[in-house]
Length: 183
Image (cartoon, rainbow, N blue to C red; front, side, top):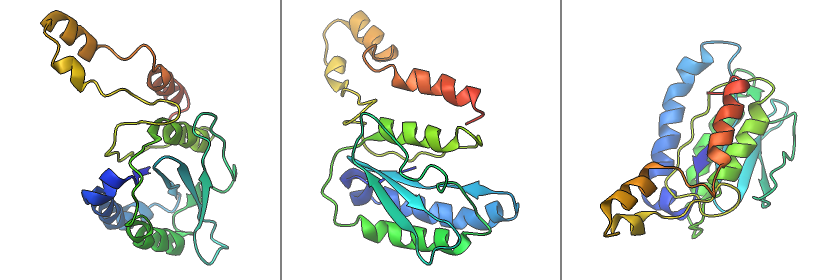
């Protein structure tokens, strides 16, 4: 799961993350049963169809970040060995696809909900690379920097150490992922 917002692209995080994933592919491909899926997000969630029968990766964009759905429920997770050429194409193109972005928003909560929906039947491991505070859609968070400037240290510490009661998505998602063998 890659953040492709302005912050991720302008800081070089996206390009570095893509290079790290490309560097890791040979060791992942050593196991012939390895399956992969890729998602990116800014203010929308982008899915990638990597079916081995395609000649190029297909990107599908879901702008609805409050009520997430899968555009192709059965085609998101693919065998790495069978679709390696498409995975390589996607990773080679990804930084250039978003290099001119000016989108500063991040729908991370929606992207993680989508990731759960993709993996809930097979389980697996999720690597999420995020450079921007989730600001749109489900799971948006408030910047708590103002709390640091609060005069009352006890209230500040309590507010910083306890999750936002208005954003229960991440706690629920952690429990749901655990039940479905998603790490």
